[in-house]
Length: 282
Image (cartoon, rainbow, N blue to C red; front, top):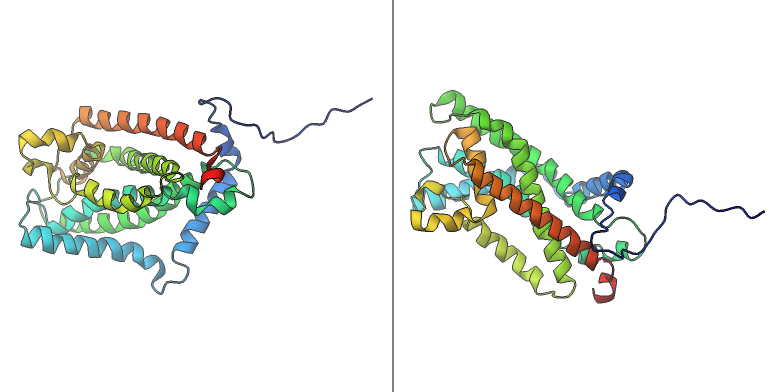
């Protein structure tokens, strides 16, 4: 009598555009955390200051913004201490920008691994989102330390119940950076020029977001352009939650959530379509 063989894993071609197989990611959760550890260790493995760069980078950036935009350009900070205003903006922005930059190189940077062994390719960009959370956590501690100082020593900071939305805002920024990043990564398998535009594009997007200036100083006739940027409402809500200054609007925040949800779904479809044949074009 012939015995039927039973296998633990079946590898099949993706025949449908909606066949995303997201359940596989949970089965490979150990590999996900292995990549998270790899990303964290390799980043500062041969540096002198190591993880201290997590603190140094936002401090230098905030001081630079204070000198250039606050003291020289005299751009308003809505009555808030300049260093606190800029640190509030760049804390979430850095998480978004780092996630986008690193995931935009997913296919080309990991071609050797992808060509040798099977695992859900989405594990790589997801590991970047998680590993960047560690960096965000360190920088968030730095920001809250400065925030607590001004909260205790001045009457300029007015936190409110909106602070409960902070975890949601972090998730929103992470998935927004992930979605943009994997779309760019999928497109660079054929169009290599795009990777040279990533850094330049992120800089332009920063100035199109209320990072170095408050939304309140934008003329009304141009404000809709800034609000069309889904990052705007997230940053403004973050500022409002901690400092009571900024523009909090459920409709604008809902727009950012809807934009991110649709973008993430589209990015998954593009990613899984490209992963079938990217080894032939990369």
